[in-house]
Amino acid sequence: MQNWLFDIRSRTFFLFFVCFLVLLYFALSKSMLSYDTGFETALSKVVGHYPVDITMDVFTELGWVLYPIFVSIILFIIKKTRRLGLVLLLSLLVGSMAVAYVRCYTGYEKPALEYLGAHLPIKSGADVGVPCNIEGTFPAGATMRTTMFAFVVGYALSKRFPRGCYLLWLYPAVVSISRLYLLEEYPMTVIAGVVTGILIADIVSKKLKLELIFEQSKT
Image (tube, rainbow, N blue to C red; front, side, top):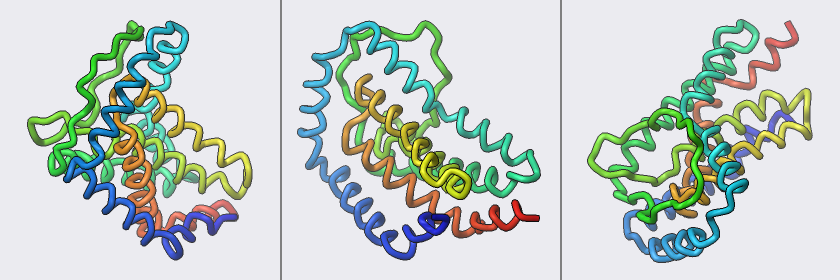
């Protein structure tokens, strides 16, 4: 069970990388933009149900950048989980910087439709900004970060909870769905966020030898 994380690199890493390149091409060519905008236009017509709107707003707030970073810092401070915290923190930092520049490079701006549903009275701070004058959304930052969290922490829990660890993937799933519902992302940018999160988390996990956490737990 423990080897599932590293099987991605040895067996399907190339496939994920190719998927990212294909998505990058779509973003640069804007060839999928009409489908993305069509999806968001259809989705904008179903908002306005207060309980659903508030639930989606709560879910999207859970994807704020400081929450996974805060958890990773706590894990890093604790001696037994220091390597896990370091891998998660470095993945989040590298991913956030990479996404910021890719957003500028692709120029794939966020949906222009105005969300007319209910909003939470308290909002979290701003997300990681981009070093340019566009509000880029490719790849989806919240999806990327929550995917990294599920990927790295899920692996760490895979030995003790071989089946339950997969429940962590509900985290990126509900955050991504909420971002679509709130008209903050496109379907393609969400998919790109998943692919990017897995690629970067896998690379950092291999470089920092995340598998050593199981050896440390025996000592």
